[in-house]
Length: 124
Figure 1 (cartoon, rainbow, N blue to C red):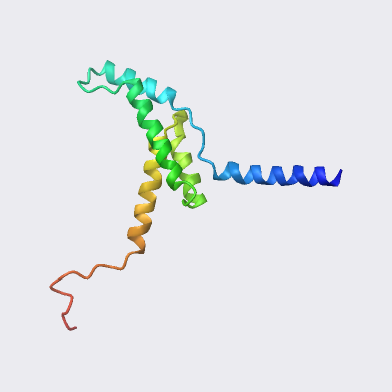
Figure 2 (figure 1 turned 90 degrees about the vertical axis):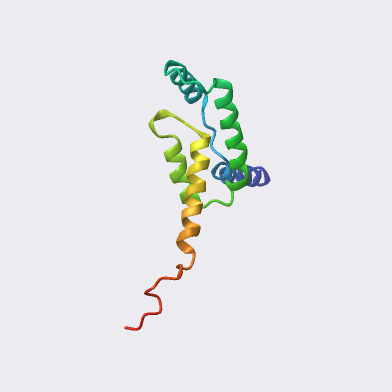
């Protein structure tokens, strides 16, 4: 009996870890339908079709798989909130947010540029 409880506890704890590290399941169909309809209504020459939108979302979801586990949980949570705000959900938005946050962090940690400023070597 104790072995069964231990196994159940172990299973439950590993499931919780997997859920938090798993890319969220977004419902992008509504976004793609709305985008396609809006583009057509506006008479855009290069209107995005539902299929093209879904392909973009699927590609973004696949790209997220390569960066998700190495992204800080706070960034993942913030970007997930942004990518799902207003009831519209988008893997493209989620991926873009993570990429922009990563780029901003990299730039912030870089050493300051010195350049060839005319004031750089000026004695005071």
